[in-house]
Image 1 (spheres, rainbow, N blue to C red):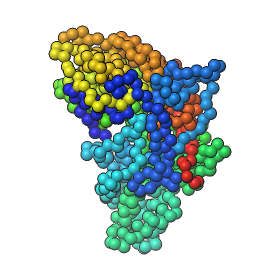
Image 2 (tube, rainbow, N blue to C red):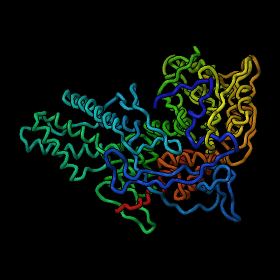
Image 3 (cartoon, rainbow, N blue to C red):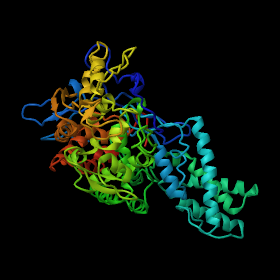
Image 4 (cartoon, rainbow, N blue to C red):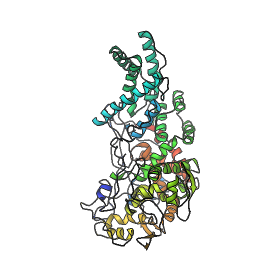
Length: 616
């Protein structure tokens, strides 16, 4: 999605967060209650929209001080005492189950990546220089689209023409664009052409549909081939026509890769995902693209049916450089997708500071991606993600950090541990959640309260007072005065304080000790969504406490679950989330790598509850 400019003046607060998110003028918290019941369509994908897409409101947030039962496990429940889906942080875990499978269209990132893998296209048509209008995040802040609008139909059609014709031209020139290979050269008879086209449908269709092509689908594609061939298109052009049809088909654009053998519902009422579905779900979650040959071969051999088999693939996939894509996408949406001000780091920020050069703006995404990847390939812990005193910088980013960056490219550098530690003190977080010329405690605090601690806040008042900036005053003084107004206090008292911990960092993320020639005050305290009190000296102190907080740990469990499933968690996922939490907690520093690995081999990931009215 395209970046949006954040302005210091007049804080368009109602535009920052969607309805149902910001606290009302009076009252402390308007808690969001309820959970999702969304399900997948009963007959697979349909053109134009996804049959039976998910519905329901977001479930409550996680917390570290949830209720306990005498002699039973400790559980983390929702923010502010809501009836959120519990996570058993110690002791016996609830039985594992699974919810319904939400019908999902490919995200634009998946679409671009798959076109690159299939056809060698490097233009990123959906998210590149002429990015399409972004899909909105769902109720829990993640992009999980379920329909196709008329404009998108046109875009898919235009894109198919361009990328396929380019790929066919490459084949004619003797190249192999992506997976596009034609299994014969210049067949001389109609029968030979049909045989070759059939072979092509089988091999290329397996890649495009992420499962074997059904007989009826093959017949339809052969009919298309014969029709355009009869209209005068060349053999290669006719092959291209089939490819255009494939990549505009719901079988390509939607996730529903059941395969030739439908699942059988077990005695527990759950249907196992087929090996083809699991291969695609793993590739989509970890790589944001289609399965590679190894995954497809495992699916063909029925070797994705047990948690151990899935675990083997996940270990391999996380070690692959392609994992940086999925890891980037989750962490970016987790920290930056709240309301209409969701940010895409691939769209460079624009800042007036001379230090925020084009190289900085373009390098923020690389820094963010490389740091996250280093965490998951390193010790894999939340502690490292939140506190590690290093980053990956180019020359101009090094200037902002006060270190010597490489003359070209990026390099891992140690940062001053008294000033920097973890993802919240890096440029991507600090500069993105800021205004042009100054820091913005509201944006930074909201990310901590809503996304890192899974807090909820109620609906906004009809009129939101602007921030009146105090002449010769600090940023904090102006925001504190705003937060003390009668209408703003009800919600700003929740998330402004954690935002003040970042006052040592200006609007581009540069470290400072003064603001407006006055000493910076980065101290404070706030009440968390689970009613714990955190007192901090600065951002480093807050980050360390968050890394050790059961509330933040259960929250990232929820956030990964929401991202993977494309919907809010339900009671059906309680067991799987509890097992994943306890697996992560068994490692000092809380292993988010083990958390992810456990979630994607859980029953919540590998099974589904049939949707109402669905016949298998």
